[in-house]
Image 1 (spheres, rainbow, N blue to C red):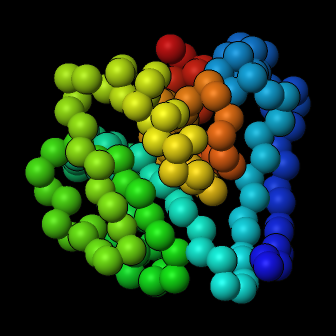
Image 2 (image 1 turned 90 degrees about the vertical axis):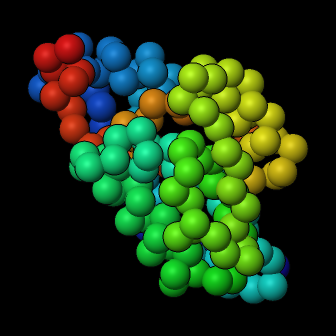
Amino acid sequence: FRYKICTQLEVSISRLKYKSIYAHMRGMFNIYRLRYSFFVFKGADQMLISLDGRGASWYAGTGIGTYTRQILKNLLTIDGSNNYYIFWSGSEYSPFKRDNAKISLSSKKHHRFWEQYYIPQVLKSKNVDIYHVPQNGMGLPQSKYCLYIATIHDLIPYIMP
């Protein structure tokens, strides 16, 4: 039995100053609002949380790469009660090896296959509860098999493409 404590912050995209951002994000996410939810679960049930960690190696040394690496490191350090399924690219994944974390390796060469076919199939077959994409929502599957979290770091690419 799960108890959910939920705090939501809603940002209405339609009120954005730049209508091109609104149109792009509405098309990209197929929604009219971005909704960020933080969930705390208590009880015997464990959650399966999946993270797209490929950005940690693809964008190493940048803000997105550092953010991805730190969120993985800190989540795995403070949360031993949930299970994690991490999509990874590259060879430096040893800091994220834990008993409650499975790492699935990909290559940058085949990232389109992963984003369009493999990741959605894993999310569905493993019954993932939450999927977090920390690199500006890039690689977010079209099919909705679980709750998604997309971290938008910067809107400049949408304002000045």
